[in-house]
Image 1 (cartoon, rainbow, N blue to C red):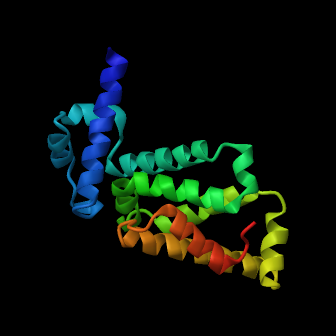
Image 2 (tube, rainbow, N blue to C red):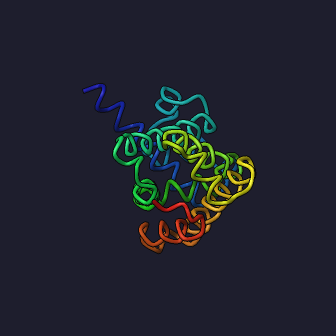
Length: 181
């Protein structure tokens, strides 16, 4: 019973926080306001988090860990389009969270996204060869073009409200980066 209550209170805090993050900047959110919106007391908040920055970091980490779990399938790493689609589906399904993370001035979402993409790339056999061959320039430049392109398209899609389907955005990315399998 206690564990379920613990999980429910964390979920309520997270939901309230994401809602508030979509309304205002992190600095403008108070713990009082957050706990009132979550229908919990401040003590419950502090059982789970040190402060609102800790909450933001934990939410971000949980989301990207969730993404890695979705992508934790060896078969998926043989198909770039599938990786993109699964990632974009998770972004669309969690749009309020993703929008809040991407708009936060306290969190470098583009860097977090770049780190995520790079870690996925490391899991793909011959990714260096594929990227360098596609661009025919030194790997560090090719990788920068590749990563920036993906991040820019995803960021733009998020800023538009994730209106297009993930498959369409995946096709746009693959067309531009020309590394489609």
